[in-house]
Image (cartoon, rainbow, N blue to C red; front, side):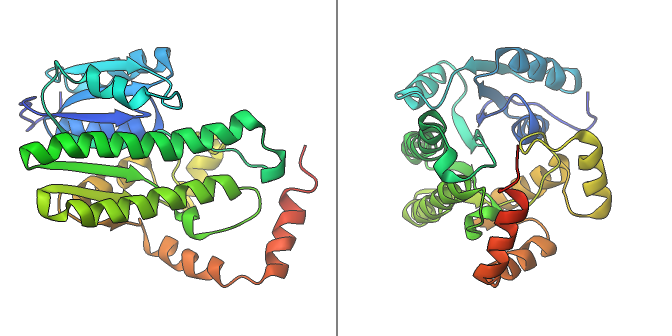
Length: 268
């Protein structure tokens, strides 16, 4: 168990996509801050591993899991109901997401539906459902995961960038609407993180971290939570990522087409 941590578990945190990657790291660090945990994922075996992982360092933490596909209609209601017999939810982290690298016209209907349902409907419905409950208590924190790509219309990530852009705009609007209620909403727009989401091999992830091109989940999550609890409205990790947003926005169409030909036209 980590030293110096007093686990109260009088309030809880809900983390979607909490079975691996950034979601698991959010869960670990929230456990270290004394929150009971509700981990939501559609990966049942990974959920079990996640609980064991967290309990190894924080044996006093209260953890429950919900294996649920959040792209299903009504999934948000299932999550809310699962929290009824749990400590009041003070923190919601909407982290669950998908990624695929291919032209939009090549996406299947199922893939399109997943982007819409998971990145847009689920994030919106969960944010609003928990915001209403937090508003009654006069306190709460909602962290929605967007992406640096929300400013970057580039070939191969069109639907990912577009739906992440929706998350950013919706979150910034909800931040303003809830500002005077005691409920704080923050959107996080990370650059590259060393996780398996984008299919990058582990050795290249480690190389990216050493070169400073990727951040570790631990560093990103620590920064995000620190800013969430300081009532920041948006978090972009790292100066390099802020510069990249401006640099990519200035790329002429010809350069974007070169990227398309190099990365998409000859893909398997």
